[in-house]
Image 1 (tube, rainbow, N blue to C red):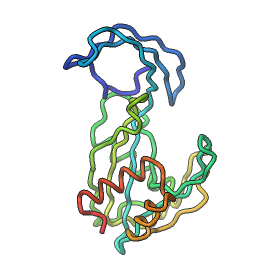
Image 2: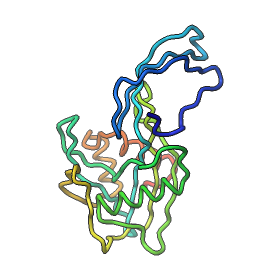
Image 3: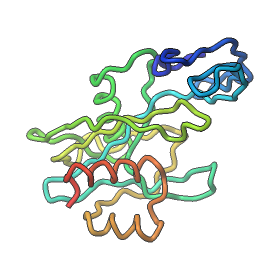
Image 4: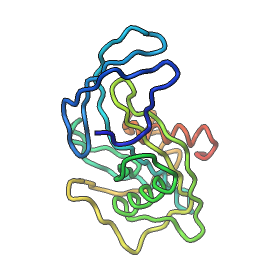
Length: 199
């Protein structure tokens, strides 16, 4: 199963064989035989394919950033994170798909939306763990988020226990102490900081 067309063979990369080991609507595992620019002799690798994701850094007019506290089964922990979710449709993703997904997740998970005068800024994407997965997550910044009249509408499998606003100094302290430790939030904060959007 191919969730997207993000990965392509070119510039010395080539796929000689692929075998699906596990197939699920949210995750597929393949054994691939490839050659690469630095390794022209064929070799095998295991790749996990996942749908593309979107991470939303939503900032209120007053300057607070919206985070959700969410249970994560794989690490048996409840983490403070930016709202995020996967793009449902496969194929090539334009920014329209990214923005729609991000704004939907912001409302469903946190109960916030872009206000009437909000800026919604795409911030590119990052690779969550390229050693074994092709998962990539787009980032958007919403400047001017407001509480949504729709409230929250969480997925039945989500366990979000709290929604809170944090100031930039609080976020920096949480990163420094290790309290914020998921890749989505860390990467988004790094990009916001590099762009001068996180004071």
